[in-house]
Image 1: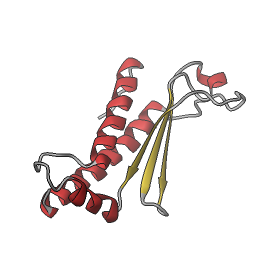
Image 2: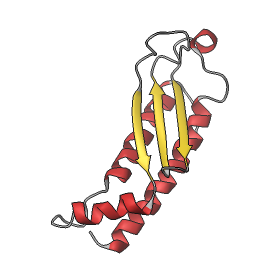
Image 3: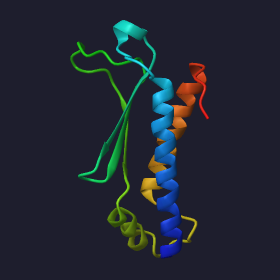
Length: 126
């Protein structure tokens, strides 16, 4: 994988993360605890500048803050820092340039999951 391809994948990942934030806001524009919204999915997106990463958690049946243990969730962790992407150069060196970095694949998977939820619940998003 060349450094040019790597930079392109890093930029694409960042663009997808922006879409993830926008879609999360569309799915959950207000409080989404189960006692308010029933079983509508709850999406949590957190950015950490400390690790330059984005954590996406999806609670398919909504968030119940009183439930112990907490409801099952689907989680994605997407690192955006240069070092994480540079690791792909070494990891995929013997492979064709079409290989995707883990971060890009993770971002695409999170976005696809959110799009399915939005479609199922009739959420308008662009």
